[in-house]
Length: 208
Image (cartoon, rainbow, N blue to C red; front, side):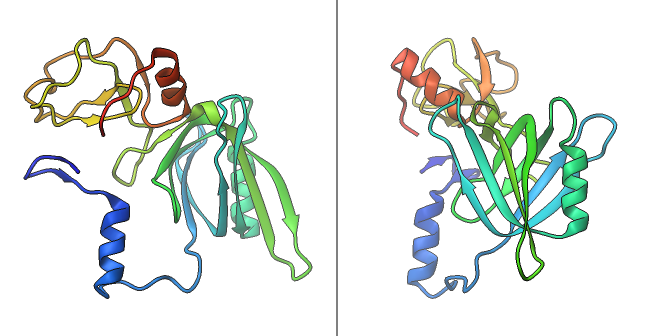
């Protein structure tokens, strides 16, 4: 769908549909777990957690909240509660779960509910303001992709990732932008609700 011969960008849904149609993969019987890489600030290292049978609700309004729930162990629940207990909560470097692209959250993540079922299982619910949600960078460390609005619209030779708000995420091999060029007027988390709001405000749209 984009990129170059050396660095192509493929449509995830189309790839999965082809793999299923050609019996290369099977539909999972059970819902895979969600994986979270959580940063609790300078005094705490990054910690990785797993939530089984995850349920993610993403808000359509930047003033609302996203919520993620799933089954957790008591040890992980206690550690997550400690990481998110500060004034500004914690940050999620990378959230990977079925049905959505990897997300990242710039702080304010907190535990809002711990539910103990009759069988003894512990279901944990996390929440954060939708305005701090963005798209996670590739790689295990994650982190919010940051991109910007170029001084001029991307040309035909531009191979940078484009977003609906008109912004681009610069790649080093792009002949038009590249690492040596400063193409931005303003930085903001890529692919998040801030981009949607910016797009509406400016009336900007670009082809992905």
